[in-house]
Image (cartoon, rainbow, N blue to C red; front, side, top):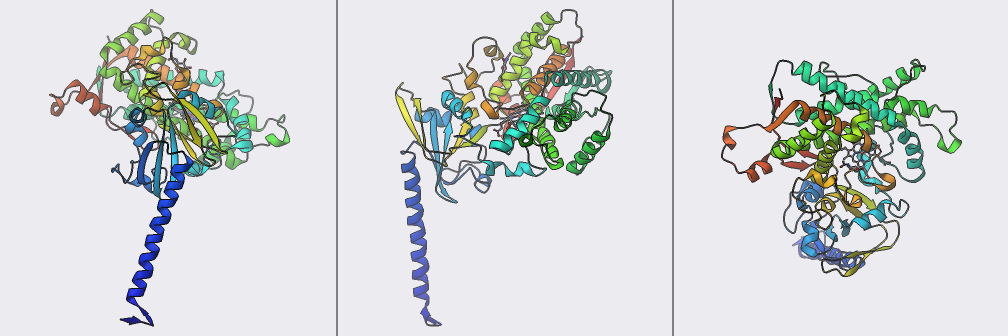
Length: 486
Ligand code: HEM
Ligand SMILES: *[C@@H]1O[C@H](CO)[C@@H](O)[C@H](O)[C@H]1NC(C)=O
């Protein structure tokens, strides 16, 4: 058969050859990538889970790892290969490798070498939706943002966090829950999301929003923030305020700034304020939900915490920010929840130049890891937090591990080094206060449901601790009961 002089067979042959060439090319690229990392063992899949498209696939052997592989696999990828650095190599959309790292000293080296291991900003682009900001920036731009943003997270601001949290919790107990001795919450986040939002509203934006108001943040948040900026710029400056937003505005108007520390534009102000909400709201709320679930599942740990709080506050008075250093058990529970349920499961970096790392394998032998320029490195927070080299019985909820000696380099819920979370103390303050108030006034239990009457403890744990990792790790359904202590 002829089609304008070319036979269908010829066309088929041509197309076939192109396809074969593509496959051969793909295979050669794949081998080249493997060679570039000296065949470091690890996962081999068709699609890359480091791309948006690859993330759409569920975990299917050979095809894809699934979007929440960091959470699901925990330390197993490393344990299987006897090495705390593994590779994930894929064919599609192009041959590429990512190195996953659960070795505390390598992670530390990367976090403290900002120039050699910058953030792969393209992975964060979605976070610039409301304007350029500190999270999605590098080098001089990041320095300028950090210089203005970091001082806002002052001790005075932390004090405000404590006071705001106190008010929100007491309003909840004495007003919203007034007259009720037993309160059922179908999903813990129904409680912790509003709490965290009210705290950031007050200590972040200087807006006292609480349980009674429903217009928390209207749609069109960025227009709203812009109006807030203008209103605040015009407002009386005499009043000293310590919310993040006011401090940012004041710092931005500081005449002492030199030319290269030039002020943030309105759009940059909005971007940086908005990112506080993105970075700080769900992360803190989800961690608190997991912490409450753990206390409900482990009543003896809850009782330990209750007794400790009573020993710090024997007269039952309302604790102040100055009591926080004494409330170590509350922070230990928060830390242990962050270890087991790190809201940010991995921190991506890239290698600006060829590099090598050394690690020690399971047999105690030194191994060299080769990193070519341009490679993506994943600081595997979950892998690190479940690494038995650093944590005894990593699967066990044991807040007391934080009260003795523990490895600070193996605990990375807030990342670390230069790009570590600037809101860490904000979140710890809120976490300590929320847990202290709940446990001192209530007994927390898992809601009993007839359909689960016959489950074992392990089954129950698996059910109420179910989580999926979307942007941050989120509990799927944690039904709780709060019983007022009398
Ligand atoms: C449990 C709660 C929190 C967790 C687990 C958490 C975790 C993290 C992590 C892992 C990073 C590094 C991200 C990266 O490298 O891409 C980070 C950075 C950051 N966090 Fe948090 N965060 C929490 C709470 C907060 C809060 C409450 C705020 C603000 C109110 C905040 C503001 C920021 C900012 C501005 C950065 C960027 C710092 C920089 O690049 O210099 N975070 N956080
Ligand atoms: C909790 O973890 C932080 C690091 O994120 C650490 O500085 C603090 O000492 C820990 N405290 C307790 C009581 O666990």
